[in-house]
Length: 369
Image 1 (cartoon, helix red, strand yellow):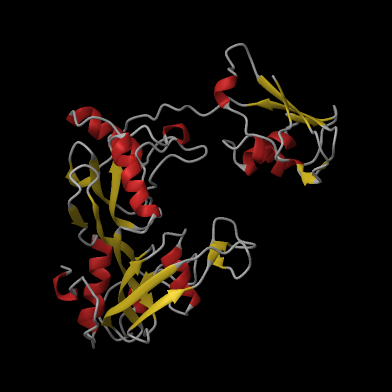
Image 2 (cartoon, helix red, strand yellow):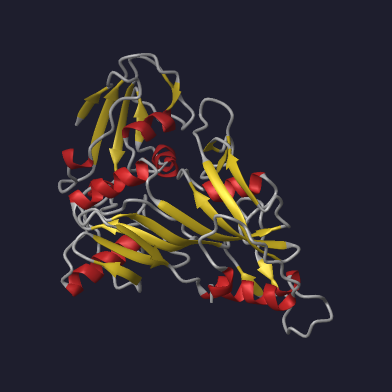
């Protein structure tokens, strides 16, 4: 298979459906039509997006890639006229295996399925990982319940029905679409910021003022892969977060957080940037919480190094939107998971607890349990 370079410089992406490997290894060849001065691994990442950069670098080191007939390095710079040949591994399957994964369903009808996402599970398959996700579990549920199927929108990227996502270690309410009409209508509401999203977060520190708007642009972290950061350059995109204090524990604070935009890791980055990292969020300045972090040395608590919370204390508590077919206003709430209940209970029992009255809150701290 041969593929000349496209008009945008990095070229169009290779479509895995255009080749098969039944008769042995598949090959693709690219001839550069202009001088890109781009690293080989970055160029191949543009052309073969379903392989991670690490996988591409491995192909290069294993001599599955040549440039002008020679074995290059990942850092080799490409020029006009260079011919890049790649021996490709099999493409990822577009068929997602259905798996029996426990998923708490808050609501389901012919258009949508609303769930309470658990900790330590990703939403949809990613590079090199086709199983163990929310989508695999929903596929099993729908097959065995006769509840239909997920929307085909996004299926080519292994994310059928996915309208929005939560981070792997963020819990709470999520909605998926079961048909294309519902998918597009929900997607439009998220894009136009017509949904209502409220989160609960336990953060390090005593947050002041009691309520505020965080309006700081976000983009990819300049040096740390998979992280976001406040960016004031042209890569930063508008990001607006509102927080309101629900309870104060001295060295920790319980916040109700309202999202006006939906950038990657938005709540986590915004709060950390202001000096209040989310408890347990070691990616953005927080730390995992042990018993010794909460109780004084003379407290009879057994193993003081026991982990109370080993992930970010962030929970999507409320999601509201206009139902895609009935056009009625709907709202779904996800109860707190056990680890966050336990953390808040310890903080309350330890005392003292401040419960300020802050205008605009929709969650009642007294009824979280």
